[in-house]
Length: 254
Image 1: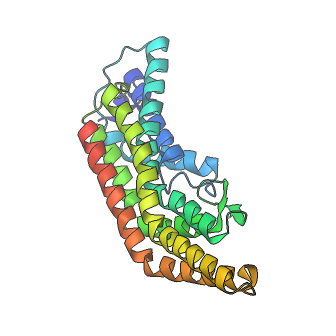
Image 2: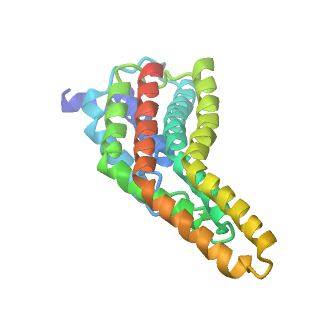
């Protein structure tokens, strides 16, 4: 592409649409959507990657008029949000599991602001979220997201994304799967906590002097922490599998 063609009307519109595709992705996708990253940094990253991938942009297929450009911008923004939400649902299985674990350990009131989402969540959820974030960085998920955007340019023309019924149904399915897989991750600790409650109840019946608050709860917390540490590797492998499945689904839909 010669420099005289860079500032053509259709190339400028295509550049803007590609910028919105990256910007929407950075608002919703894991790692890039981290709340500790300022908005101006996210916008600068979107602008930088738009310049990097400018040469691989396909030809613009929409009409150059204000209504078509506005609809195309909304389409690009929707594409980035849908992709980010699908990946975020796969990532949130560990935060949901952490909430269930915290409830069974009695830590449901002990919460802190999660740096990834910026919302208050139990400390076990925050711990699993931070470990999961390191796992995603080790797996180069941030590079995969950029490569997906690059490959999507050859499949989805700029401004040509439409929300299909199959894609909407998958988002609903991914939401329900997040709860199911999260409960499966938390089940070993939940089961042991229920078993401990049964044992403590039997002890209180046979030994009325047994103080559940002084003796029972610390033992229950210690056992839960032991199981959490023992299953941490398996939990991260489940997170890895969920992220890989999410990317496989993105390849099928897009």
